[in-house]
Length: 222
Image 1 (cartoon, rainbow, N blue to C red):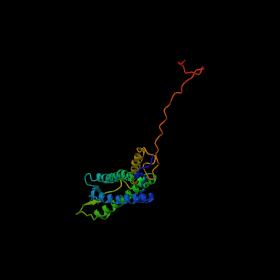
Image 2: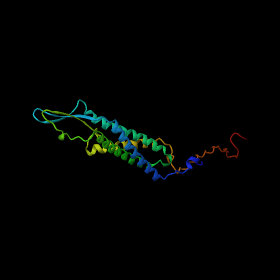
Image 3: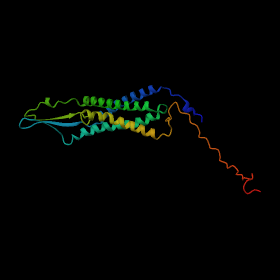
């Protein structure tokens, strides 16, 4: 069976160039998502107070502590959305399907997470400023000071929590790409160069040879 014209057409860019485009495109998209997160994430309102005994106390206003979780969850949600959409879009680049572009997708998603968290944290601190609770002047006449703090991009600052935020969306993107690979019936995934496919041969009909008796005639004949 001859290959179709679409399958024979070579891609305009090499596979290595396609992998670089995927990595750089995801990193740039991650920076944009970081800016979106800095605009949407809720800030945290805190209070610094001076007790009657002269002790400084830091506390959150009402349920403002929940915003720390909400902001970090929003970052994970944006990166998860990017992981699913990017995996499907990269799969549509049919000539370059395969392990190279899958590795580029994983690396690019990690870069996107790093760019999103870095850009988001920088823009949030630029918007709300850095707060030093110890430098807030308090006195008996001015016992309470209200502050607005930037949201947090991570659930915590331990290496495990930071690594989980960076690697979880990348793992999800790899999983989506793997599911698309499994759902494809072709061994070459439709990539270029395509493997030539042949029609299975139709077996010849089986005929029964006549059976002769010892006398040289067929059964039932004189």
